[in-house]
Image (cartoon, rainbow over all chains, first blue to last red):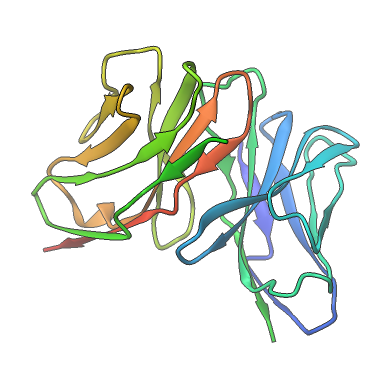
Length: 114
Length: 114
């Protein structure tokens, strides 16, 4: 079955550490996105990518980095510069030619700073 | 800039009853898409229903229907015959035609009581 796989489901980070969240899709979608979800704030866009080796900052990119070396993969690194990284992170993908459709989402990663 | 507002942080409904979740949005564009997503306790985002702005007819998917008022920039979701499994966070989202960016509201938590 086609879909998006995010791993791990839960992740714990110590202060000052970088951590990488994985996102893989087998839907042959061109575009991929990372959202952060906090209580009462909905989903906020961190980074997005339309094509391999190219990506753009979203609304809250500071303290995060991404790469898009393969069409299927869009990992997100939460760096030590991100001051409040505890949140739920959602990865999504979409076909750029199908604007009428929404996104397909992964099941998310819950990141906690310990 | 486009914005999406969900003014009801929480709603509750009795099983088998009907509930309406509100959503308003702000845009100067005429061609766009609107979506309702459901996020159950599993945190998986599920597309519930979508509406093309150029269609006057309100979208319907089984027990879920929308009341789309383009002039008022309103897009409410009606859930009929509510079931316990409908309990979730519901997010309204906007996508401008020809773009891929999805803009979310802050969500409404729906509780369903037996």
